[in-house]
Length: 141
Length: 141
Image (tube, rainbow over all chains, first blue to last red; front, top):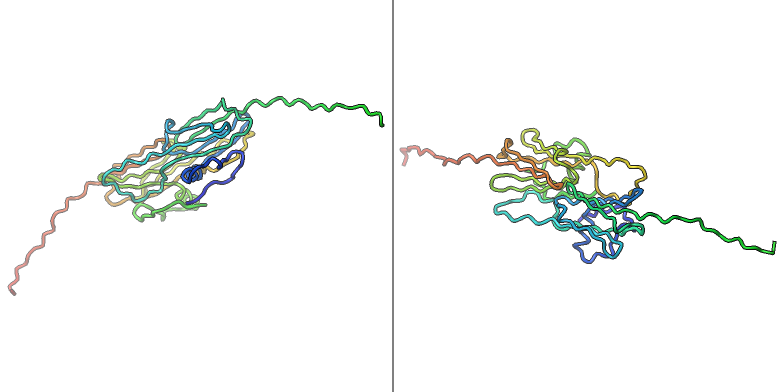
């Protein structure tokens, strides 16, 4: 088996919740892009052959975005002979640890042409008030 | 780079027509299934992110089925930062040598959810007449 995962980033990759080897393999074999723009985080995942209704997108444990889906095995047709079988079957899965400023109430997911795009808006950043340091009076000058 | 090609079959795989390294890489990184049923050969190719109009299916040199398409590079948005970038860009491509009984006038291609399916009907097999061996008369019995 070959592993294509590159650019491991502790913020968005989360392997602590993997419970079995099948999930681990599914995560390694499901390529994703994760990017940030001014207002949101965007997760793009290749899931060829899956329709919107066959994909699950959920937030687990308050800050883990999980996407998964499964390519159904083909019905066994009588008399069919395979010459080449490279496309993998089974599960597609990824989990991403979300940053603190991810707005869990503003998550959108769209699947088109076998590509899932999940957009998580950022919470508006709290205004940073200048920190005022009180100047004490000292008589020892 | 990892190579996922397995089950190389000389009937359906054709690497003689590769003209450059980019095409070779695209062919290795585009997974396909090839199967045969009673009336046709079926080629299934994962091409996530591509629409029907962006995929080319053609027969070259009388017996080579070629499928190709290219994932357009994303427009560079200002201020976008990538944390993970595993999805590959560029070309998807495969070429398959067709068997002699492939009917080049009966090829159908459908793309759905990022998966291209090309069906090539078989030519009706010529009736096999019994081969008659003439019995010569021999006087030397």
